[in-house]
Amino acid sequence: MNQKEIKAIKQSIVESSALNIGYFSGTKEAIIKAEPMLLNEVMAGDMAEYLTQLAREGKEGEFDNVFITEAVKVMKYSEFKQVASQFFSYQKTQSEILAEPIEIKRSTFLALQKQAAENFKETETYNLRKSIESITKHLVSNGKEAIGFDPLSEELVILNNESDLEPFFDEGLISDYRSPKTEIELIVETLYDRLSSSQLNTIIQEIDGGSGINAKELEPENLVEALNGNSNGVGRLTDEDIKTINTVIASDQKELIVHDVYGYSQGEYWPLSYLWDKVEYPNFSHDQIVNYLEHEVGAYYRGSLAEIEFYDNNNDFIDAIQVDQEEMWLNPIEKVRELTQNQNFVDIVTGFEIQQEKAKGVEITTAYIENYQVEKTEHGPKL
Image (tube, rainbow, N blue to C red; front, top):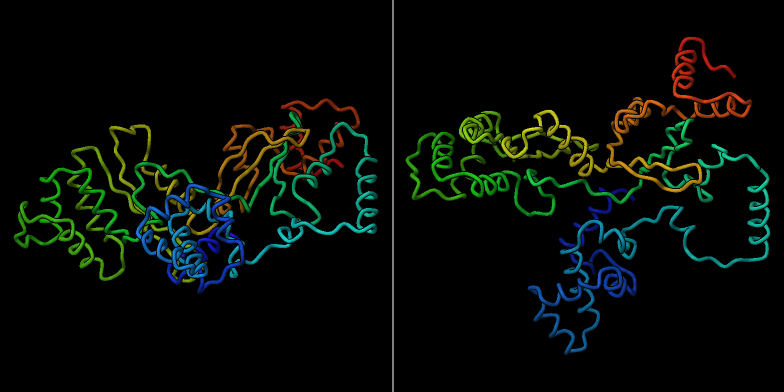
């Protein structure tokens, strides 16, 4: 299941309780094993007294339901992902099912033994096809896709669409999917935390139409109410309100950036917001921040955040870079070159062709790779 679906299960548990969603025997133990500190956190929380009472009365079923629900509430996504399969609404992938312990029969053993013998028939120092299959498959596809290859270093690039990822939450980011507050409430909370009373007074007077509210009466609720009134129930700041706020905070070298990110279902979108401090981060740009909101935070919200992984010619993992799957649709190899600043990377088909040239004794250099691609573009592959 993807991030969006798993987060939906988590939200359902929080809203409806674990019992209403359904969970397998041993879920409580699985949670404690995965994150031992959650036991202390839950037993020190709001439900601690009630949980203690249930334990004393021997109501194990009720205790488990309350404990599991409270644990899920405080879990991060990465923590919940470890135990998501314990709940009934989680749908296991074929690879997860195949990864579970199975009884090894003689027929299965003989089939595996035969496959192992086949795998060792090839004697080449480096076989690209074999590496791709080793990394991207285990009986069935594991969600990894080979997208690039450096014929010079024999480095393989894999797009991992099923990574358990969270974006980098920059300190300027206002949006927080974990918060029950609306986006407007989060923006106002940030403004009250980082602006002076004079600036806040000016903003609310401008936005509230000079209603007579003075600095002494200035409360976050006033500004939230005024902004909500202007939004007509849409839940995002109007362009005029954003302009008003930015006019006031421009003297402090700050800028409020609001960017709408759209999902894949009709009507699904998130107004993400960021407060840019230009003094603290002079090397940032407006476009860079919008790109961060769209392709990192936004990709996480809509479930398209992925990872490109790099492997050496021994199939050992080297490094990984987060990427929005949407940026990989048109020309993935160009995106890989941009991110790595390595022009030697070629698409997999070209990689196969150049490896066959190398097998014939051709010396592979950066110039050769460049010329090969130019000739292929003009005349088609050599082989």
